[in-house]
Amino acid sequence: MIWNEYPEVKLARRILDRHKLTPPFKVRHLLELHATVLTEAIPIDGVDGIAINIKVLGKTPTVIVNQNSSETRQTFTMAHELGHLVIPWHIGIRIDEDKYEFESGESYSLFEMEANRFAAELLMPSSIIRQIAANNTDMAKAHKETCRRLRVSPQAAALQVGNTFPPGAIYCAVEDGTVVYSGCTAGTSESKPFRNEIFNEDWYPRARKHSSWNINGLSIHWWEMTDDMTSTTAKSKRDWRKILDDIVSSIDIKEEKDRYKLSVNAIIAHANGRKRIEGNHTFPHLLEACHQRFNVERHALLRNHPDFDEFLNLRLIELLPVYEIYQNKSE
Ligand SMILES: [Zn+2]
Image (cartoon, rainbow, N blue to C red):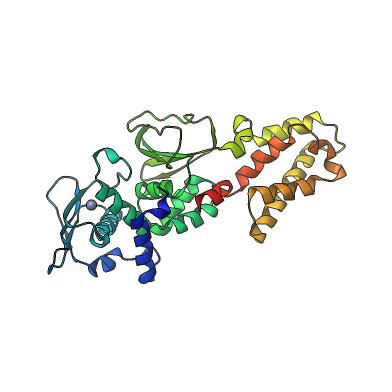
């Protein structure tokens, strides 16, 4: 199912609307409107939270949150337990462990996945994630900004980024050279790295972007796969700088070659800046703007070179925000 259509996702949005909340906010205050909330040491291994008396007539529910969990984890637990309290068909008692396993359906009950989806949307609304992605040029930057802005753990953020985007993005967190956790957007055809697998930077040669960032001894890697629209550029393993070098050294221009290359890059940078200001910073708009600017006598030899389109595509993809080319699909 598409993320936006899950009833528990819609429910989370309605609650944010009703209380006029924009994450990050104090989830505990929200939870306290529905239950007695206790923060205590829970002496059962791996248990993050317990909810008792969910929709039991005449009783106020109680939620116990494990005080030994990290702060971000406690926040997620409270949002998850709130999910159990407000999703109409969840009743009785829930004992919750290891809630970060969103999608691994094998050992996970439907109720748990529903409460997780509710919590994810409550703490990290997909509309905000898309906004963050639109302002960042790669997934690593978008991921880092999501953690910073919404004050969530990298793992929870990665899962929600994965829920929000269309197929074709894979991530893994690496510690001491091995994979600690990994995931991908729903429907991605490539398989994600396994837990404990030895990390290899070249796992996905078909990726159009590979980016990474570091936090708390982990390095987190993202690969963005291409789809048909960018398949021509995907096949190219060349760097746009190298292509431009090759083109310029093979054509007979009258100017000094390094200066000429600078002027080519300046044209693209200028077009890019304009499109951002105008608010139509998309691949087709930027491509058209560049074609117009190169359509002058000075650049005729460059423009007519068989590798020019490949150079321009690769260059523009680097300048555009994450997933700009998918934007319509992900709405
Ligand atoms: Zn649960």
